[in-house]
Image 1: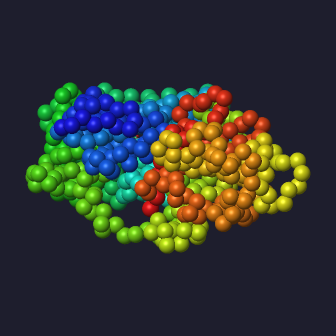
Image 2 (image 1 turned 60 degrees about the horizontal axis):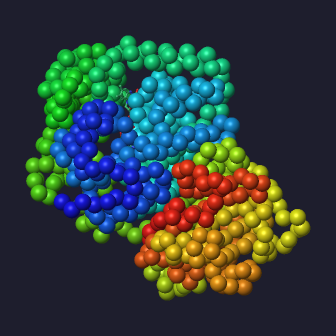
Length: 539
Ligand SMILES: Cc1cc2nc3c(=O)[nH]c(=O)nc-3n(C[C@H](O)[C@H](O)[C@H](O)COP(=O)(O)OP(=O)(O)OC[C@H]3O[C@@H](n4cnc5c(N)ncnc54)[C@H](O)[C@@H]3O)c2cc1C
């Protein structure tokens, strides 16, 4: 196998058993550690060229990885753990942030409503995917919005209603999208002592039920509420407590937990799972669905008896692939995906302060870049609006205005000194040049062209609106402002169908915002870093 180099930090030949909470799993060819949404999007793009099976993990407290070699890339978001308050009651969390650390942050800030996250194993990204719940709390109830990356690299902001579909079901289970961040809302202020007491009560409850005696994945099956009984009580009645297969054993304290008592293999766990599922149906008349997510190549029959959706392996029809984010098989299936209607969101989300200067940016800035036409349509009509960039703000983000009352649509060199939203559009190769657009809610604007970071292109010393005539137009309404760009303007920056985009904002008094956000903060703040921009493939 030729050695490949991934476009982000990665390790080769990693034992998944050693990296997962459950302590089960074979060797993965690659474990990738993207640090930003842009690095993650690069990785997804890279993988489309290399066609490797792709999987995603948090801490592995709800995954059963197969024992066999995983021949592709497992993505871990363990380098994306930023937590910051973006308003008085809104906490921005990158997907790799640990549930317990989030609960501790809430305790420190005297915010109630997240006590149940304390000692809930795992990361917040998966907690969203699973719509995890306990002690009367559920992640859907405290979620203000979810930032996802689709497999084609689109960075979308989704509402709770779009993602959460009731008990332990989310859209993310049906459409493979990766949660990169989440905004949680905790409006209730409470005494720290009260919050701490509740956290301790929940921890004690878990310890009493022996949750942490051995590695497990928590509840193996979801509850079937129509049965009127919990899955645990069904398995207890059926005598499963203490049932063992190799190193896997049904807990003696909670019959829906399967412990890894030491050296358990995925096959051991699945054999217990299949016995439990069959018995629940035959002997108790209850259909139960697995909560644990199986990922990798397993015995196909075993997967079927456990009710796990799988794709037959092309080399060995007795084996089935389960839980992949993407598989080479998709290339074959791709032809069947119907074309999607335009406009399509390419990027969409809240502006954040530079990492480390988080609270300095007033909250409420929200930006979007949409593609309005397919590339094919745009080639036929290159002067029609092709990309649309908009900014929405309900805050004082852009309250610093130019001194004189300029008419809407004025091209004003010097706008950078005031509150502005900015868009950079770059060629994905360094040295390919980029464009910068600045605009404020009053419709004043500036546009300029660079050959390299901060190196203005020829003819751009004195700026004017003239070179942009017919290439862009303003869009303004009560709620948002922005611009539409023609294909003729964008085309020189395209590399194939790919381009790099970066939204930014500045208040005019030294506070800066980014979307997508970056890891680490350049000092002094500097947006002109095209290598950090978000690469996206147009549709
Ligand atoms: C002792 C114990 C007790 C538990 N108690 C509870 C409980 O009370 N309530 C409850 O609901 N759960 C419980 N769980 C299950 C587990 O804590 C949750 O499901 C948790 O959210 C899993 O987090 P993780 O990071 O370990 O996810 P993983 O196990 O790594 O991943 C779970 C799934 O999420 C996917 N995933 C991972 N990251 C992302 C992402 N960023 N975007 C989209 N998908 C992603 C994975 O591909 C996988 O399909 C318990 C588990 C244990 C071990």
